[in-house]
Length: 346
Ligand code: TXA
Ligand code: MG
Image (cartoon, rainbow, N blue to C red; front, side, top):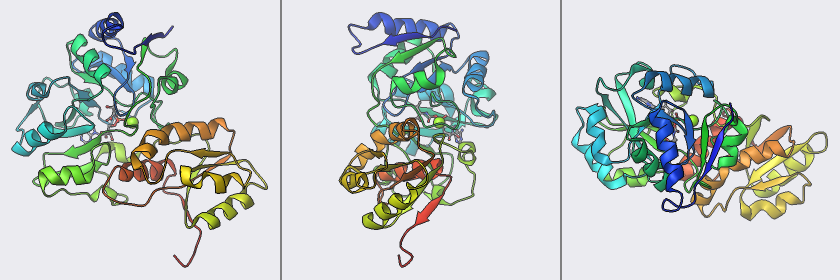
């Protein structure tokens, strides 16, 4: 299949391309679209055949449900029922934006979208191209991240091209994603809302609106969201997270790079020290600016592969209640929870 690349830089001057994307989606095609978080692999959520092709193209396990994207808050009621007051509060506070709410689904949402669950994840993205495309399509869009299953999520059209060129009808190139990690997923069907995946909306922000939230997503081994049990976000070379001080970490990298090719994904602040080890150094943002780390992480994981590294070592930021939680979560999963503790006294 020849993949059309629709490059969009302005809604006004590229309106014909937005219309083209809308027309393809309405016609049952699967196309990649930019959102503020990551690129999505989109199809009409109400068209079972089109949704089935999303799973095929990504190689995604059938038991992992998809998020449905809407352009207007009020469309939530077309897809969901028994919507609690707290969900309206969240929508009011954070939509359009990087928040997905899991709610009881209505019958119009096909079972293939939700992997047979009676709930559906719904999100109203903030990305202006995404919203324009949903509006133009005139239907809600089911869209997982537009990567081959298991690979790092795409935060630039070139990542989507790497994974999906020739496999999809079109890729809408809207430039780099501004958030860079996926939406926060929160289950609103429980008495106390449960965060299933940390993401673009932080715990601090959620607590401000909800008061109490259950954040047991950190619990290892518990599978509440089907997506939690699969290998994720991983480059081809194995990733290990390096825990410890900078000088110990640099010393460790120097030793490792004697016998094989290793790459380091680190903070800007640490780049100079790691460069002295001779290994390829890929800074992904400043540790003092977690939003930069979020924007840069997935690209850094892909670039580490391009460097030809056989092993990738990564530095992760200190834990808090901000977007660094999403960064840590993605890195730990990319590493399959593989960590190297450098200082045994820590
Ligand atoms: O930012 C995002 O959310 C991006 C963009 C494209 O919008 N999409 C995305 O989709 O990350 P995906 O499919 O890669 O991740 C969706 C996550 C999975 O972990 C899935 O298991 C969970 O949301 N999920 C979806 N529906 C659910 C449901 N009904 N109950 C529990 N978890 C659900
Ligand atoms: Mg994904």
